[in-house]
Length: 253
Image 1 (tube, rainbow, N blue to C red):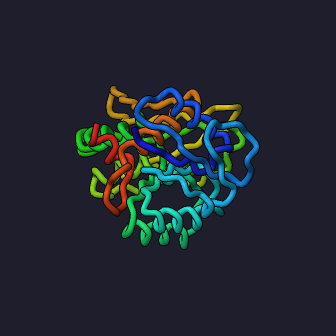
Image 2: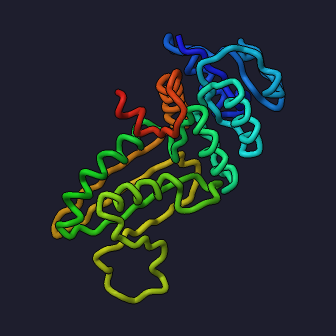
Image 3: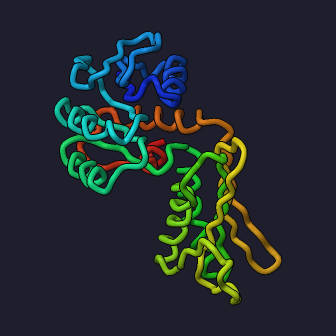
């Protein structure tokens, strides 16, 4: 049984993960960390991470960027691997993540969904077939109206996966409104839709002559990200120091 600390346990994702873990017989939450202890989680909650003296095999983080520095220090001090799901890190924090990974295992990914990360792998194979054959490539993503950044980090990761398979020869185009030219051969268009309560929809389109192939991923709830984070926690427990990502989780299955 993998023993896990939930960092950000009383946030929305922390609560989703807690419920899923309670139904999983391979992993258990032995402690939680949050700025407030205002929920009955069934495990002890510490408002200061450095007060947590519970033995664990892995920390799963879905908190806030401001809490990441202490999380990294705690993980390094206690030698507990960290699944880092918090986004919006500064450049300094990203560098600190890389430095800390030299002393303890850290898994960081643009998207925790098992489906998205499997798709990233499949797209590399597809790109090697359709790119040289002259197919045009477009990425269209849809998210809820409250999402501020565009395109999404996941859309960029999908485009990067395709581009890497094609020797990074393609240019990213985010807006064609100021151009009046025929579509160049080697570009990847990225489009963003914002509206309603859409959790996340991503389409990668390979458009050729008289043929269109579309890879689609649709998230109907945030549980898909929680499930991926749990699987990442199981994978990372006991791993040696280093940087890992969800591709490593997929490969291990």
